[in-house]
Length: 208
Length: 208
DNA sequence: GGGAGCATGTAACGGGTTACATGATTGG
DNA sequence: CCAATCATGTAACCCGTTACATGCTCCC
Image 1 (cartoon, rainbow over the protein chains, first blue to last red):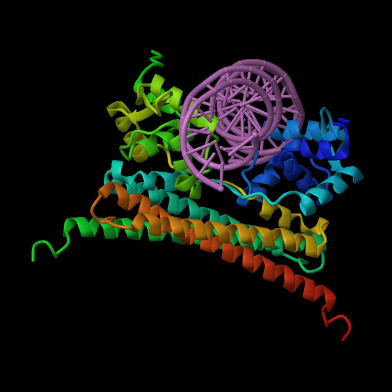
Image 2 (image 1 turned 135 degrees about the horizontal axis):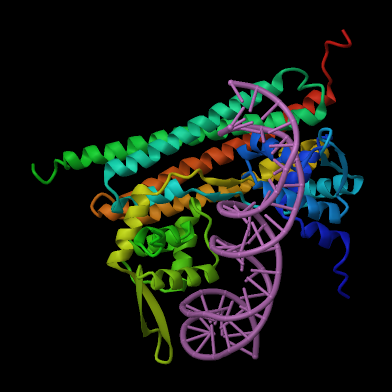
């Protein structure tokens, strides 16, 4: 009764990061592992933790074993070859199935800055403030990057190529996300300052 | 020259989830592994992925080995014992050091729903919409949970107990975060609908 | 009687990272 | 000449999960 070798079992055995790599290839270009890493750092990373290069290579191996990608070697220069990967028809089908029908999972969030504020009773106010400050700078930088990414892709035909409008949609989502993240950090800083002010000048009621 | 056994090396060997567990204990109560899991699911999970119970047990082992927590057995009922953990002075010091001085790391975000929209060119519009719809429901539910969490803790003296104001601060942050997440999902749905409308009634320019 | 909650832990496995190894090319 | 970039992979390791094992108590 246990036919562990069917397509569903294969699909289940691809981790989300594998779909991400396959997804990068679904836009139609032939890419090397190295290319994929750069691409991931320029697009994927705004909404999905960019995998290490070594993992990209191993996911490619897995995807090839499953028949979801094909590879061939092409000349890198006169002396060396490189391996370029392309999505296969099976790969496109499996990815489509995943996009449409995989269980909708909650986003994985590990917000260590929020955790540190949560433990604020252990910290000195100015140290804690500095931590959140640096996080706000991070959010600001991500916002700048994602905005730049939007304009660089927008150069031209977003409406025409149907495969391009969805990345564009997600980039705009990312813009809003990181704007919100920055604002949330700012608000947190203000809350911390407010708290400090309350302590410097403790509540009036008791004294009066 | 390599004194790998100093306090900094010890601190470095605690993963963020370990600090989370120690953090739960830093509020002063003696808790079992089981208690910690429940607590994590009620507070931590809004900003930091709640660890599996088995990992909590193994983090507790690690923390005890490092001298950051102590444990003792107390009667669970007439027949059985349970092990309760408490933070030690060294643990409090190490945790404080981490909160104040650890490098500020970017939050880990793995947003598979955003990834699926990004691959929208592979999906049928209504399937994709349904995915985002379910995500919006998730965000809505998280917002409701975090709001409930706020009011349940607020019953009483948030201003008085200094250890309670920081969790309160982070709960409010979480409220804003999940409200934003819900709104972002809603906006994504509207963008998808807008796209569908554009396709049903393709651009005028060419025909005119 | 049976299911849910309390309570603790181990084992197997997989996902993912860092470090290491290698070597050619390009550009300042 | 040296650093950065292109390019590919392996090995060790750790973080974290699921599955499994066990057994009591409380309540319907």
